[in-house]
Structure formats: structure tokens, C-alpha cells
Image (cartoon, rainbow, N blue to C red; front, side, top):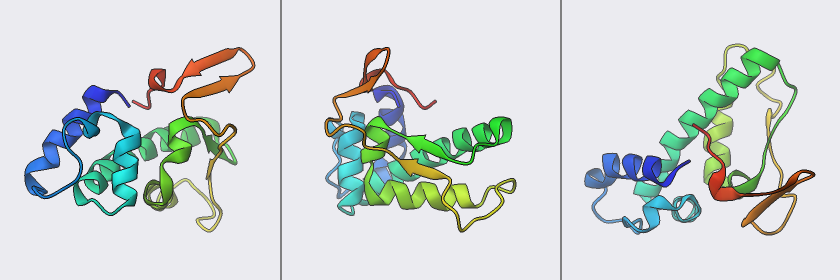
Length: 133
């Protein structure tokens, strides 16, 4: 997700949550948003909630087109923490075309310990270059 998209979501909710740890500097870094949401910051949770809806829509489209048995999220998304995982899993389970709601469709893979770069056979891709929109 681009910093501009994060800032846009943050601005939409900031007035509703005046006492929060997520300031305008942190709001453009998805890692900071994830950390604050996992710490219980209500504004960060609202931002992650909306982010999870967009992610769930993307996953839903992948499921409709390709009918995968598993979807693996890597990079920064794999480090989203418990709040993102629970929210995204709840949203994915309500898909009408997804058969068994007891089975997890989304898996989080932390192939490397560093969230700075994502490695693949073709080379390295900076995490900031990834977009879910």
C-alpha cells in the first residue's frame, strides 16, 4: 500500500480518534500502523480494518479467477501481526465461493527474518515497491 493511500485512510479516521499514538509521520509507514494496531491503538485498528477489506477483495478476486487451495502472503504483510491476521481471516471466511470456512485459505510466510527486502530467484524487490491496490 502506498504512503499516500495510508495517509488518505488515516485522515478519514483521525478526527474520530483524537487520542492515539498514530501520528501523521507514522501513518505513512505500514509497519508502524501494524505495530500500533497490535498494541491496541484504535486509530491504527481502523486503518488496518479498511486495509484488510481491500486485501480481502483482492484475495476474493484471486479465488474467483484461479480457485487456489492456499494464498501465501509474504513481505510486510506476513509481519502484520495478530490483529491483521484475525481481521483478514474473518473477512476471507465470509466469501460465498469459499467452501470450508474452517480451513485457512491465507498463510503468512516469513521466508527471511528481515522485512527490508523480499527475495526471489530473479533478484531482490524492495518491500516499498509492492502494492496491494
